Length: 325
Ligand code: ADP
Ligand code: DP6
Ligand code: CO
Image 1 (cartoon, rainbow, N blue to C red):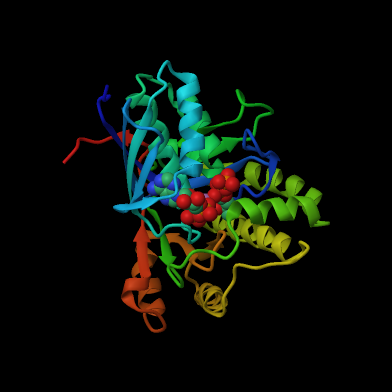
Image 2 (image 1 turned 135 degrees about the horizontal axis):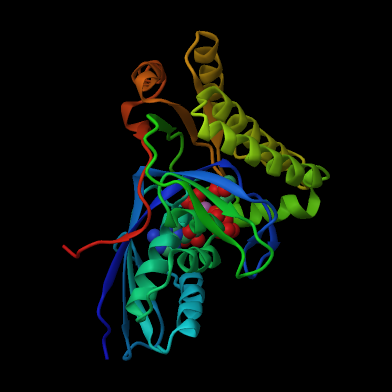
């Protein structure tokens, strides 16, 4: 038996209020709620079909055969929810650098959740899809939706999922990704956040402060207040990175070029350009700004960086099935 193949496309999202710490590692329940912007520029396409002749799941990423352990664990979940017992062929293409702090795990597991559940004969609702994607990677719960998305932390498997805040936002904002290093990060998000939860003396303060930031940013988004949204975003990211530096052993994702970009953004701001930075589990910087200001910001960044390192993204759509080529 070979099931009908399904291919899904999901876009990455960058958190303005970060998810950084798990309350439950197995169910991937977060310590705090988070909020992100889904981006049009970066995405993953994943095709899945089940094949009863297979002895195990087969996983190809960017046309290379990869260790399927993590993906197989996720597929076990899909199998347990459906009637299907067969293993699957999984072929995925990342239009985003993998494991570089540009949220490949978010687009990856959102795409896999939709493709695998449909190939297994299930038609899950969007909240159900978000819950399933969450089990692959927490940030993937948010990539089910486009635009601004909140992942409500909830208190158990049923109550922890993302909700759209503004799916099709008409706000003319963008995010410039400055790709400093495409290489695999030294400490995965999973390991980094766990170390922080276990060892940072500041962790309890983070939880409180993140919930406060979330309330404030939702209000600022509604008011289309870029200055406020930017300030909250930048401060929230710095609090997350301060946790990493206060862990034991301490660590940081910053490289010297990371700090250079941060300083340039601060300089531009002092010149009256409304732009703010955020950083995830990697050295690459994402700059939040208005579409009108983006050209000037790109021009200033181009003095120090190659054009190929500067990628501009706008709000993107939620997960969808795509026709096979
Ligand atoms: P990132 O910053 O890119 O999200 P993470 O460390 O959070 O980095 O996640 C990377 C994890 O996601 C790795 O285990 C990687 O193998 C997995 N991953 C990335 N892309 C895909 C994909 N298209 N399909 C399945 N798994 C993927
Ligand atoms: C810094 O979702 O990649 O990007 O749930 O362990 O797979 P796992 O981690 P992941 O963590 C993302 C962390 C972050 C912030 C965010 O996206 O909210
Ligand atoms: Co990730």
